[in-house]
Amino acid sequence: MSTIKVSTISPLGTDSTKTITLGESGGTLGIASGAKTSGFGKIGQVVQGTKTAQFETSSTSFVDGGLSATITPSTTSSKILIMCSTSAIHTSTTSAGGETLIKFYDGTTAIGDEYQVAKTRQDGSYNQEGGGGGTAMFLYSPSTTSATTINVYVRINTGSNGRICQNGHGATITLMEVLD
Image 1 (cartoon, rainbow, N blue to C red):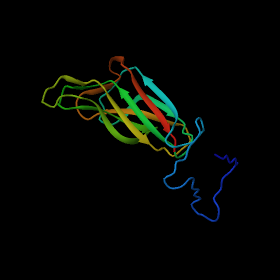
Image 2: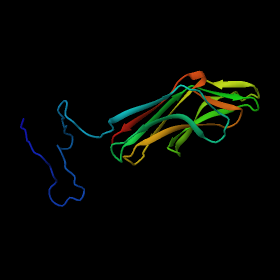
Image 3: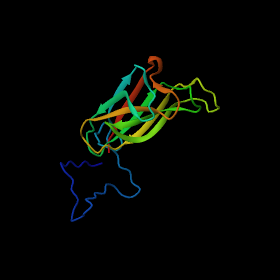
Image 4: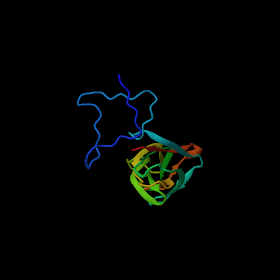
């Protein structure tokens, strides 16, 4: 086995793609144990926000639930994997089948889908609570290297009110930078 030591490898000629081929078709390229590499879907950093104070709303529009975390991506091509887990309850005294929903916001801009975290029965029963909790995940591409705050907003679709962090049971939001 031979060793070649260089500072920089550059393609020859005028190849507009700047492609360098290592090895040959069907060959194997080995990387020494402990060698540093970059990107390739590795996790660059992880931050977490927590909340234990119960939050309640009767709004059918999304309102800030007080659960957030801030991350500063290292490159504009990084993605942020957002994960949230919370206890939740939905109370319905006027209609059946109500839901408590959460949605992620970058500051005050909605991103991703809304997620159901609690639901009451749909059989016409009123004066009931339903739920227990829920989780949500979203892969976000903020395209920035500035500090990015992800907030969890809450709303109900019908009924009386919805709550997260029911009776002080905790909620977490975890942000993971996925390097590109």
